[in-house]
Length: 123
Image 1 (cartoon, one colour):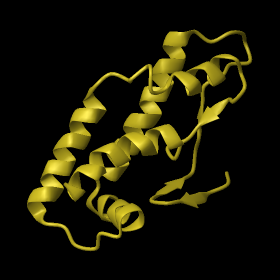
Image 2: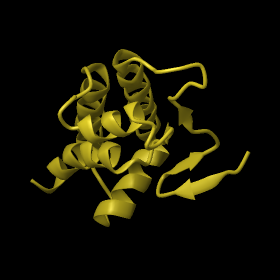
Image 3: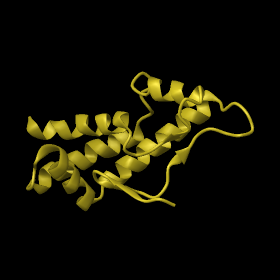
Image 4: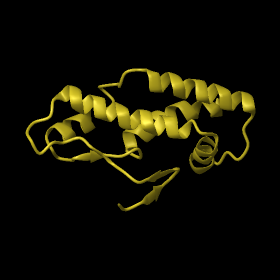
């Protein structure tokens, strides 16, 4: 399997959402998108990935331990929430219509949610 490096995530797999046996339910698609999003969040909760994300996207080389804990708390809360169906509607529609068959952890919608959390460090 091809391994690629995008930003902070090394990907050795992509989530296949479609099925050769017929149409996939919206519920199954939503479940898979949430799994991919949650995996991305779990990865960035690791200290080295968190610091890498900050450095790559915000040019932050140093951050206090307190701010790291607040970021981790917010990331865990995001991971534990249900998927924002409005935010992810375009990718859900594409998966449903088989316009795309995979979604990876570096999808712009996932990165957008992460950047909302990390954007709080500037305030």
